[in-house]
Image (cartoon, rainbow, N blue to C red; front, top):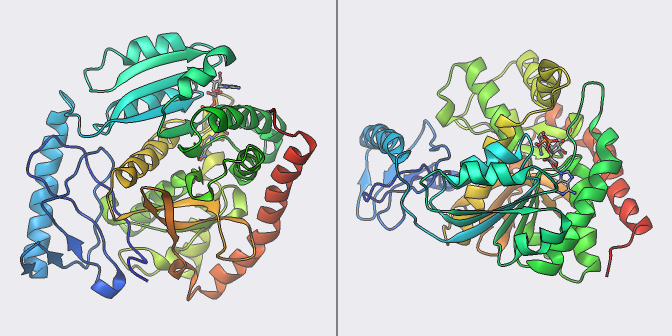
Length: 412
Ligand SMILES: NC(=O)c1ccc[n+]([C@@H]2O[C@H](COP(=O)([O-])OP(=O)(O)OC[C@H]3O[C@@H](n4cnc5c(N)ncnc54)[C@H](O)[C@@H]3O)[C@@H](O)[C@H]2O)c1
């Protein structure tokens, strides 16, 4: 399959030197392709492997030339990026809504999305305290117009004409709480908000952040089904933070450049259901059995690391906002016609017997274009066992979400 291991991110720059960097398929020897018709437009990380060849529209470069070009481009892009904090050139006009925008995740996420040149309108909705957030953010001289919507009477208006809806509304985990403890509160919040999405912007991409994602995504799917507007290609559980953490921890352990590392993370988004496929890490890197065990456990428990460090003051918010912003940016690039956008996320799936499963997907204008199955082939014994072990827990979380909705049908 084309681009089985491909992942691309772009970086923000108001440069007119139009270049886009992406990883192509293994069958194309992990090419980094530079073309002039596409260009970096956003703030998320530039991505590349250590074993690259370069392909310009007209010529192939040696790997040395490629490395030099890559280095030179990254350096220039970083300089542009620094300058671009002063002014971001609008490059597309998508409308994004954040539901739960006044929260710990919502506020930094709103700031990051405000910096995107792909966004022309940013709607901030919350049940309280969102007016000040919007006033504050609206003073940033980036292109998007910020609007605030407070309380259920303004929910519908916050969603009109929106292309991407991001939902971080809910309560975060406190010390001693499992993700499932959050279930009853957040399940109701997600249900209510997705009902409004179904009524007001049924074609939007929906990004669910509210935990437990393993259950809230099936709840959202069921709400959309009951409303007759379910498109499985456009409903996503945001698991990007697991990938971001895996990339960071692997880079630290193996002394690699952060920008180079890409670890696919599959399964779900809680405890043992989070399965980093370390042997599929790009660039190729070897781990001892002890390192695999140590990294896997750390990635699975990274949320708890933050919850405990914050000691009662919430869960991961800044890293989550960064991860969610990356997923929004990828979605916007896909909507805008970029043809090489790949992210791991939790979606309706037929890769195994679980109806929802996180895997790498190819994103396009209509949402999920393909589920990437190749990451799940050739697993080590450790990974295969971990995959089998996560299935009962993930299945139970999915069923919990579905049965919640059967007891509480959606409002007409
Ligand atoms: N997917 C992930 O990787 C990930 C990571 C961290 C946290 N989370 C989850 O994200 C959610 C938010 O976390 P946080 O730290 O921002 O919490 P927070 O309490 O700081 O913010 C939540 C916000 O949601 C708002 N809210 C509550 N009910 C609402 C409703 N019905 N409609 C609209 N807004 C509503 C609150 O007013 C608040 O502003 C939690 O469920 C948390 O567990 C997910």
